[in-house]
Image (tube, rainbow, N blue to C red; front, side, top):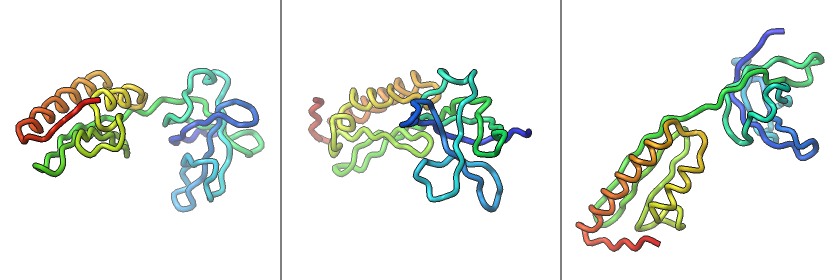
Length: 169
């Protein structure tokens, strides 16, 4: 049987407790794509081969090699590599209006917004570092945290020079 490649996130099965994923064949390109369990598209289950069990984290994106099951009812992941995203950090300043440091990776953005942040995690530097540290899909995490911290300190200094109050929690 031939092997195919795709990207997929695995979740814990409610019935078996094992990690499973779902895969669908794109109607035009015929490539396999990872989908959610509640996807409206026709999908098949994807299970882990024995040697991968215990080494895969749930809800993390993996690049996988798949083999079709013998009776065609699903796929078996025979190889998996976690996908790590390169993060970009940008400081956004609109004087007297917006003061932010954004950490962008993949399709996600984590905001440090000391003025209009909605929670402690977005309003404080420590809260944002906590969120970034908990991610396991960012490449070179230590240098990203260091760069973010440097830019956040710079933002706070600019806010002080603009006479914008900052009260870290």
